[in-house]
Image (spheres, rainbow, N blue to C red):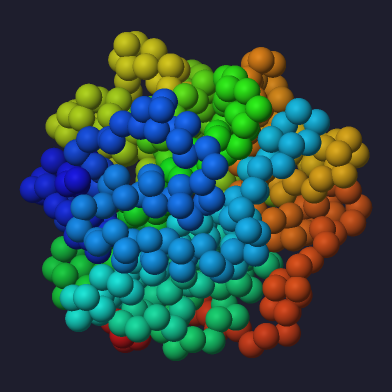
Length: 461
């Protein structure tokens, strides 16, 4: 399996090189040259596999340069840190399946990918006798999951940018209370998009990237998307244990990586009926799918902060396929976005988009109402992002479809929002309680690339 860039400016590279490159050296995102196909017979043979065994079956099809035993051990080690034996259990409540992706160390779905990526980095760096300086941007969950994925790991230093005061209190504590000397937090006076722009610009400076051995943990890194593909297969197999019926997924969406993983699973042959992209008020992707309107707006702060994004970096991967893998067409689209703040698609292209996805936007009032109603009906607590997905699924997905909603975070990470909806805070796991009172470390700075660059150079590993 070889990997290419959406911008078409690099020769095909191996999986390990793709992991280490992160963002392609031509500024594009890396993708496999083709997607391996899974037959219905193979899919059925996976039905009784545990999560780690299934992860190997899916991931190994994209990895040609790591020996089988090494890859199995990497996967096993990555998911041994999860508190639930199924890793991503599926829970049925009132006819809705909740795919719980929050049983990792930071109680968010990002752990599924970043525990794996952290171990991958360490394996490759040890093999090559190299060092890596990771730079990432987060709207909340990626940062803490990335930090916990690489904290204390030999040869790795990590710098995480987050929007100051715009994450939940628990998200901030999970990042800033980690004492390991290889961990650095930068709180940017701005939005997540400001953080992401700085990271992209640093990676786009190829001399700087090469000189300081920069690596990416954001979902621009293909290995993150690949790890997330696994739980679509796992959930589909569990939801169809009794009888195979149409299965649809509702995905709370900010940066498009999680739902793109579902799109990849479908391209591999997983029989997904609908992929529902659920947004909050920051609904550029919903406007695109429903109204053919991909035009930039202002980021609105909401009770689901991990979705408070306008420019979803992983959307480029999907556009590349939408444009029939035409890099020139893709580059023209992003030139249009930069010059005019929008991307235009043809009528035929939009027809394809609506074949691939459906979408719904859920505002704060409806989110809080869904948390309250779902708890009243089932006794189950939803975090605000999951509530967006559940509300969208109930409104939009067909009755004859098994509805799987991705639960992206534990409700305790957003206790303030749960209290707004229900009048009481979500029960807090011990792993969160122990964060309070810890000493924190964080540098607050303006959204200025040179200030960030200087800090990184000064603190480089």
